[in-house]
Image (cartoon, rainbow, N blue to C red; front, side, top):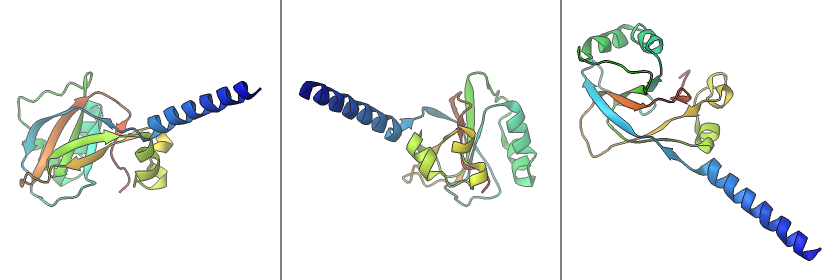
Length: 156
């Protein structure tokens, strides 16, 4: 009886440890800077980034307002988007040092309004750490391994 109890407690502790690790563990994303875009605005907003998974999403973004339409004109003419293998992220203000997500940050740290939260739509909320050593300001386009569940903050 005592051995069964010790075995059950051990299994419970192992399951709790693995679950906690999976919940808190940050998954760091590999990314590559594709280009730096000239933009009229240069202010830094740490929550201003958008992730695209399809050409339709990208086209909709570029039609959103005059600033995004202007960004489209700044893309290199030779740039070809490969949405089958990659997702893309436009970041305003500073270059990226790290991109990551975890179940914990998606559930508790997503600052999107409740109607647009990542958890509600089963998405992974990407968090960005900016490179404070680089002084340049601008708009940057990054390429990520395709994952249609990645998303920034929505509804802000």
